[in-house]
Length: 121
Image (cartoon, rainbow, N blue to C red; front, side):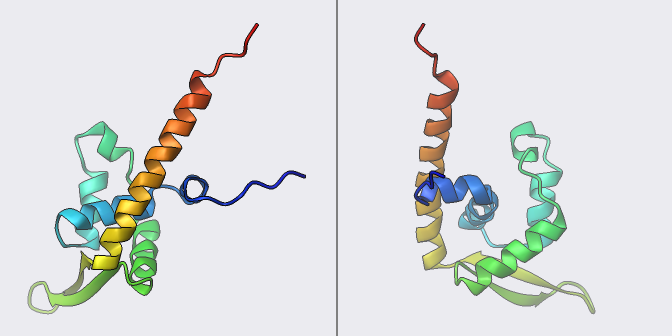
């Protein structure tokens, strides 16, 4: 059985765009998880809406990014008794965001090449 090397584009293909999407949103401004969810899932822009992920995917992803040191979160008060976790991207997260962005562009070009491929007759 042939085994392919695991490069960055392959890793992006297997894991999906979640990390890139969250890092991209936080690269623009800090926000809490529910705001990220609403930004994606309540968007009128059909392209943005296509990236909607459920909360059961988003929050574990945020925790994983925080453990990796790519985002940092802090609890803040939101009303009299409620608290919410506010996230911002770290310097390491910005570097990873750039790296993942390049890997995704490579993946998109590769898929485009394959989809445009016409077998010689």
